[in-house]
Image (tube, rainbow, N blue to C red; front, side):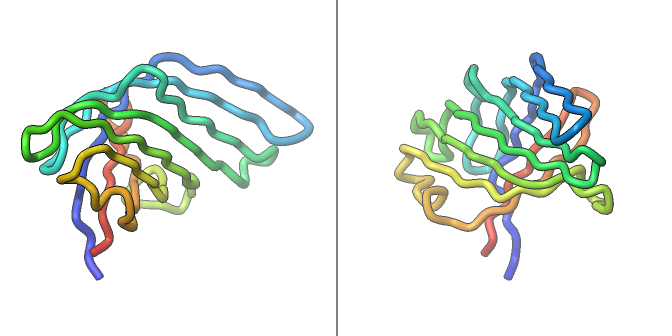
Length: 139
């Protein structure tokens, strides 16, 4: 089993809304845009991307669920869109990344149809500008 990098989402955070709860879980919703690079796809994150994070009362749990749409061109030069639902958890023990996710993708690109049914892993990496989400295909 191997991992092939499919694309990287360069997240640009726009604003956030918080619900702080001292008796139970808290929630942060972060809206974002950004750009996307990779050997299979180049494009942008369309308006409306949001990452919802739920933080346990004692900081022992921290989940995230992001949904966003990409628009750009596939590696054949054809215009296309990709929808991504990215769910995962933030673990303090991780040394190589901020968090790991399990992305689900849907695309209208014939050349990228493998995105509709493949198995993928995402990793979040801190950058000077924000966060990069690297998505890998399990091969």
